[in-house]
Image (tube, rainbow, N blue to C red):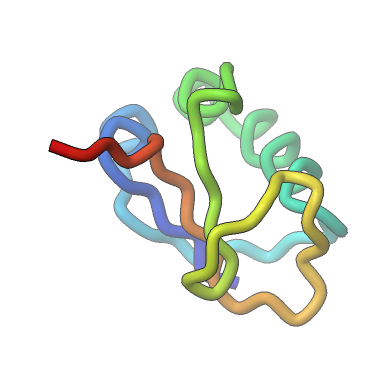
Length: 81
């Protein structure tokens, strides 16, 4: 699946997008896998309460299943202004 990173998540990881092969069943499991890769991922996912996730461009939860998902995007909460 494609994993996209936006804003400060992209800055911490150093990539805007990558292709990931995963056995994760949920978004939370994917975050655990990514966090275990390197310190930069661990830093980006240290506080998931400060993150939002979209699956195939629809806002979702971290306990959502990944079956059939083609794209996961991580980003900070959007603010108005």
